[in-house]
Image 1 (tube, one colour):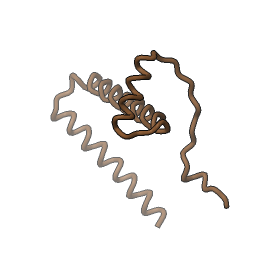
Image 2 (cartoon, rainbow, N blue to C red):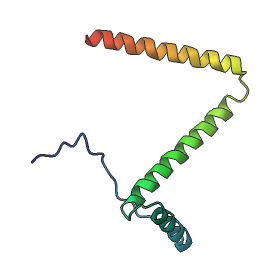
Image 3 (tube, rainbow, N blue to C red):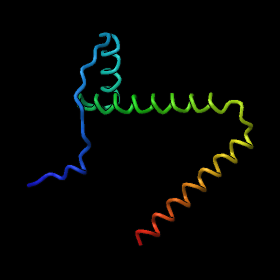
Image 4 (cartoon, rainbow, N blue to C red):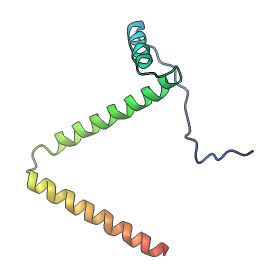
Length: 95
């Protein structure tokens, strides 16, 4: 049987060093949530993604701190309109 490589995410093995206290706390938490040893990687990956998301939001807020809410909404609306128009043009070309 062949495997469909497109459906399986590419993974990277990572070695981390952290305190025994953090390790114990995390494993205790995962166990209390009914998670198993293999769920540790999933938990860490999700935590990293959330951390990156929150840092990106913080940076965006800082970058636009001096922009009025109305002007910011106008910028967002224009950007959304531009992306949608581009999407529909590309979609029409494929049809």
